Length: 305
Image (cartoon, rainbow, N blue to C red; front, side, top):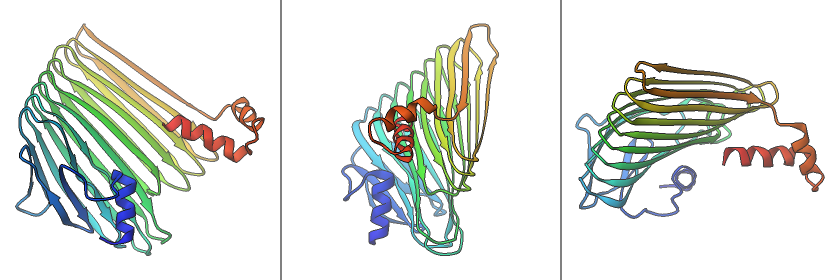
């Protein structure tokens, strides 16, 4: 892998070298490095469109890295990855996509990740998106995450997109059985004329299922964002969706939270707040010696942590 691809890997997966455990590294449309373990198998799909990741029941304290990097201008791809997590497993999955576009043609990665989480299994899923390059070509990423959680299962999602992506449409759909939980933390920043859509749809189908969906975003310059979150309580369950956003410059942000209680014991909450940085916050930091731009940057960085 060349220097640009290694920089992208570090940005989206924190990799300075080949990781321990199971991994599949995809660069410019091809799998370039792969490793499996006794408990985690990675298998290429027969049609070449992606991979299957199979994690044995009871697997614990192991990780899977599946980053994707594109450094070839004009490359577009659609990748399908399926995760099968066995009962009582407890693992971390680190994904992410980085695009470097130094040319004039559009570069685009669309990824569909499907998770089938077994009974009482737990996973932490980390996904980071990053774009770089001074070319005129757009950097586009459209991830989809489809989740099915069996009884007592748990999924924690940490999704981050902070820089360099011109357009993104992010869709997450989840279906939960009894006692299953999903927790999502999304952090997003757009600038320039960037466009971002984040859509969540969660069906709480089993008793005592739960969902907590939180999005924190910052829109700068003339960028625009749309946040859509829907939770359907179809049994005795609990659900919470929250969108907090900072708007700056000539940006535009829309939040569309929706909750539907289809059972008398469904307890659902939605919250949404959009606003600019309070002037007194900036003044307070400026009294400590920061410029106005530095004060804004400190506030934004703290908000997105």
